[in-house]
Length: 140
Image (tube, rainbow, N blue to C red; front, side, top):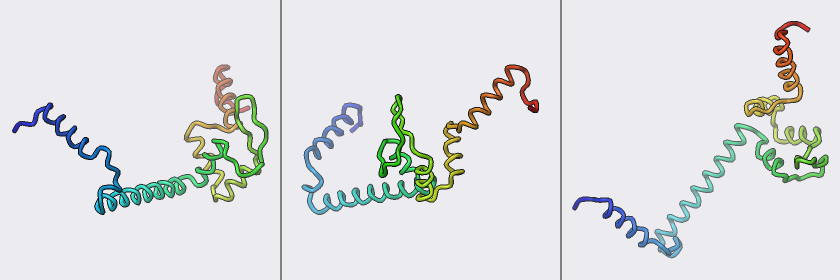
């Protein structure tokens, strides 16, 4: 028999309808074992991914939760008009210290994603201003 597009679609529908509406727990011992293995694999994959992220950037999970507004302590400043929450510098440094993150490593990570410190931003702005005046690279 030749496998045509119509026959393939028919086979796909048969297989889908064969399993439709049957939860894994109702499929007997084999189905339950398969469901348990899937759940264990997903749990293990999630754990490995969290460990990998912690190795790559220590303290990143805490920073992400902090960015979502999940805060464990009342070490906050005030929320500004744009909705940003300012965290006191000592609370931020304590968070980095507790998670054994190197501030230089955090700076490198942020710079790779395009974030700049105020000092870096001012240097860049001054370089553009000097370039516009034709004095780029001259000693000040």
